[in-house]
Length: 113
Image (cartoon, rainbow, N blue to C red; front, top):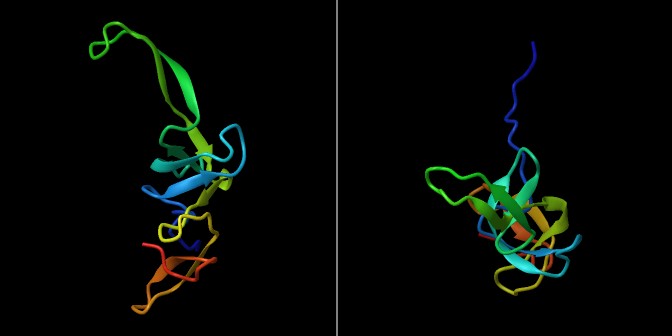
């Protein structure tokens, strides 16, 4: 009999984090994560990776036209910025005082909320 595990992946970044792009066309830029696309391992970062999308006329948008919006960036190209120091840092996981697994900054060894 096959075991059923929780298939949800854990990523080093999540919605609301401020990140630095470390590879690609947007390299060196910072932004806030608006949305995570977990099935594609991508994140939509505010103001980065802007693409032009052609919209057909509809009831909400009777004019149609070309709209600029953010596209996804692969999470391997993102590095979390430590909220306390403002510097990019790698992430680890360890148990806090209550025994819950929590992210921490490998640079400062402090927990990240």
